[in-house]
Amino acid sequence: MAFSAFPEDGAAGGADLLDLGYRCAAEPGLWSDFIRKLVAATDSRSGRMLVLNRAADQVLDSVKHNIDATYHSRYVDHYVNLCPWRPELARKDRGRFYSTCLDFSCPQETFYRTEFFNDWAAPQDIHHGMLGTVWEGDAHSVQLLLQRTRSQGPYSRAETRDFNALVPHLQRIIRLSQAFNRQRQVDRAASASSESGAVPFFLLDEKGRVIHATRQAERIAVEDDRLHLHQGRLEAVGGQNASFRRLLAEATSAAAGRWHSPSGCLALGRQAGQRLLLVVTPVHPEHKLLAVERRVFAAVFIHDEACRVKLCWRTLRDLYGFTPAECRLMEELAAGHSLKEIAGQRQVSPNTLRSQLKSLFRKTGESRQARLVARIVTGPARCQAEPAPLAFNDNLEPNS
Image (tube, rainbow, N blue to C red; front, side, top):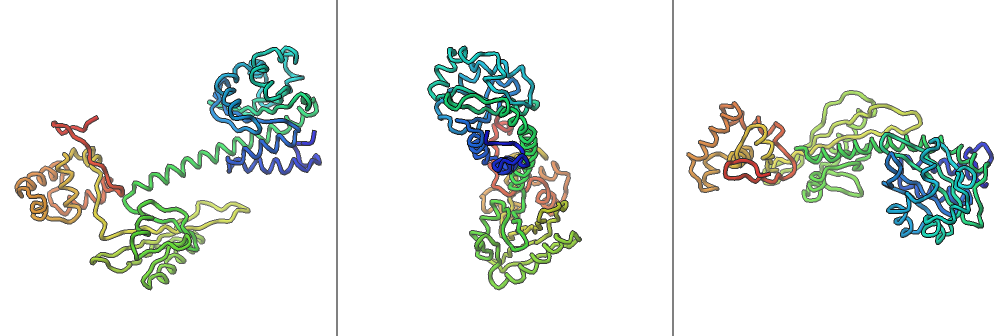
């Protein structure tokens, strides 16, 4: 056998294979390369890694090498439970590999008479296997299966020992992969949640490179000529970039030194009398890891004075019981319009609007318009994305 699981055993390919395996924990796309190299290192024909349910009778996901896609689909849909070795594998110890020729009760000649061999394995010249359940969790199990042709011959006892030496590494890799995936899910959820926030922002590194941006922040950078994205870096225009770079340097220095620093603010030009405000604040790293470069970041929050205030009507309904008409009036008041202006624009009676305003006061417990507006625009009803108005029926109840 050309492969040894441990680099110190003298197999040059072993170290490279293990290095690649541990990279798979952070880069799942490399599993196909790992299976391909494992197949080559073990003089195998093909290989598959299957993620199954706990009972190991349903394939949920898989990585394969040198297995025809049509045959693999047939295996997943039908032949997975016709393999004569699988019932016995389910009774064998987890965390071990087994040679189909040496460790199973089904003789080779009996195997050659099965539907599994004649309809699925034989057309692919698959005669021998090495397989094992390398991981079993609360809801899933992971099996690794390698195959050989008739001419390649069965896997020996010595080769089985080498495969079993690989199992602890595979289990560590899977545990690391689960930890990485849990963190990815948190990161993706945090990123998605940031899109619903009221203030768009960029996350920059110390060189001004954009690490993350909300969609609204990207839109502003593209459409507003006071900001510019150049080669992945955020820049202020109109002679303001030097000031912006200074604020960024102060924020990232504070982040690197882990000391408190107040946010800096830069007002960019005026368009139609309105400014674009950039608030730059340090983002402190949680901890320092040995042998890992510590990165520092700064968040740039964008406040556009010309941006219309947007309110989530569903939130207003849930919190205060506002009707659609009251939601509309509240949004217009939050945008700075007076009752007289709103009445003129909508061609409605001022008395109607005053009646609705009284209802807003009653439902929120406020008695002054300024306090009402402040309460709403600083509360959870303010949103970044344009909310879709709720559909109400004649009884002013939301449609299901």
